[in-house]
Length: 589
Image (tube, rainbow, N blue to C red):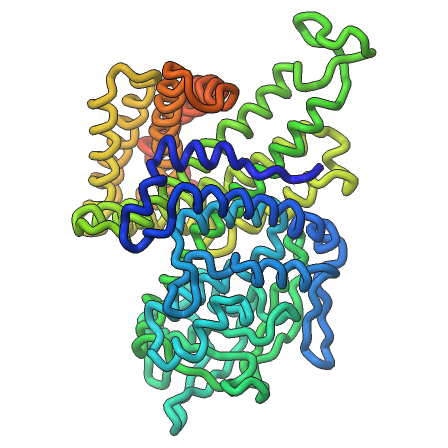
């Protein structure tokens, strides 16, 4: 089926729940009027449907092709043309800085476009997605000379960027990095080493590829504190001289086959320092945090496409009769959407998708406030929220993106297990999102091990205050009591980790993943309460899209009845501690 961008739902969340229609009142986003935002959303939906989706299946079938003689990589048929349309229409530059040719629009719009791109063609979206992270890292930490040389063409999409961290012997533990950087007399560096799993490391979509590479300088500490970040272009400044940074092969993957995942060999390639020596992790985290939010939108994009496919199938597939009597008496059977168990799967997809979208756009809106609001206190609070929720968005949206693709495949039954339908590709494509840019377990450890204690607990304190103030100030709203219970569960879990995790790090480690999920479910409950309140207000006033608003009230009820109840056993999981998890000896396995 043809992808249909969820434009109405996005606008409802942005304008009626978050108040993002007021972003143009901030000087930085003065051009982001409601009309401009609406136009961008609608045009992005058309791009996804008409340009990106048509080459998605061929990307999966053909994959990328590697030539060992030239070290070149050819992308699937139609990718070059689609990428050209994407960049020439300005989608690559949407929220990039205006001084280097970007449009300077709100980050929230980038989140929305990311979802649509990933719904329609996740593989193709990878090339521009990581480029955007490279832009942010270079803009924040690069020298004026590097910015002047590279940013404009990266922003336009004429060049693309990569993130080169992982090596054969190290993934998460980057202190084991072996790539070395040797200073040269002209203030550049000679980069030598091998990186693996490099998305977009080599391809034929752009004129140049700019690698951001972690490496160690001579005498640097042999830990993450000894890492520096270097810019290493495929072609050196001037455009014709080839830098010895070559693709050594492609990974053979279960999904995202149209995305070139490369082994990259840097054979004394020329590079330039980004940021300060031995401060590469701080510079790279600018890129990584942005990439983590982008990967969260990948999960949401896959979840949305899976829902659309399974809903369409369930409406058309005739099988058996409704338990309450025939609903389609003129046919031999009823459509399977009438069956409760099929409804269970579809409702879980729909309600989680809309809740995850609200969580993501809430985070994007906070990101915009953190960089554009005139009040320093508001900026600080918004930045706290973004830092705290980044691992939550990355993990929860990718976990449920995969789960919703799995549910969608189940709705299709045997048809879903064949390549005649797109669900099996969505399932394969989505699986990597729970692994790259830091596995979801690592995200949970970042949340519990770093974010909870950051600035003496200010980040989690800000979230809990926001939730409690909302609960106390809205006692008459639907689902108030259930939301209050969930917030108290999150508070109790936070207190338990604070009391036990400091004494025993393994207690924090054992609680990390359920705690992240509890936080996600609780914040989504807060968003569902706000969505239900906005829908009810508009219905009472006789305004708005009545079917959409009525569906919000039903969906909110489903969330609080069927999904938020998980928070009870998540709290029990957390507070039961590590003992049964860590008790087995080596011999007992």
